[in-house]
Image (cartoon, rainbow, N blue to C red; front, top):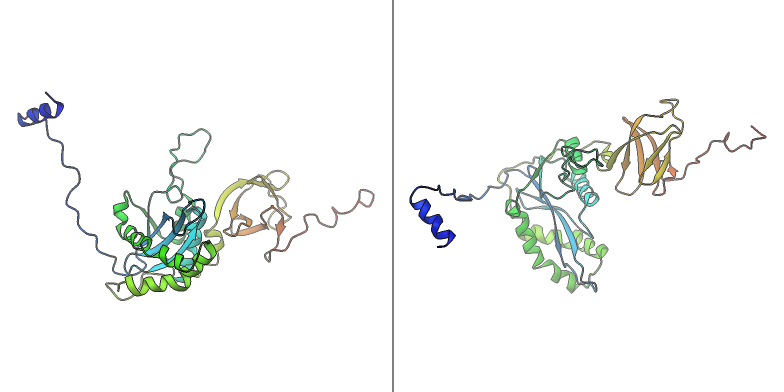
Length: 305
């Protein structure tokens, strides 16, 4: 006899307990009553416009749960930490600080480290860059356990995939710059007219953000220890610290390196900024101009000294 027949016979005789039914009766989750209470952020990988290589593009979107309003949408080659932080910053600057962000469990949202590797001192409880930025703003990160939990976002992408590629094809758009321009100038307004709904209550849950340190919050942050020659090693670059009135030397001090969204670097010591650097590690001032790496004493010859 088969396994299934034996199992049914044993369960019918009361010798083996029946396993509980998986799942249950699901109820539709009501929308949040106010805009800004819950935002979705997700990307859809799709052939939004045809390419010779047959590659696909990522469309990164921030959607409001209360009204289905799209606050920001951008085409990117790959969804990653930089693109997510950049989109979150634009939303905070234009709308304000929101209450919670609902995402999937991608590695740029929630850490995938187990804390068992001897080569990585980070633990599984260390926040990701997105988690840290949201914590500094006072917002909550909620990670869904399944795509069905983000059904509103999945339905949005299903609707857009059936319409947006045709609109791009009619206009002959096949690059990121033109596609993002079309999103800002035409598509978001079209979405607003056809698919946006009214909130259940009047008002907003967004809080205006007037913080002057958004460049630091929405940057990739890493801690480093200053060497004896007052240099900091970061991403195969040697960043030289210049004399400061704060200390006679920063050797052995713990500093924080900020990799900003525009690719530039800065070093922070508490609330103070010790230096700005370009992509090659050369010191620049706040206006992006190069700064002399040696003072006038170091430019003298040995005989002059």
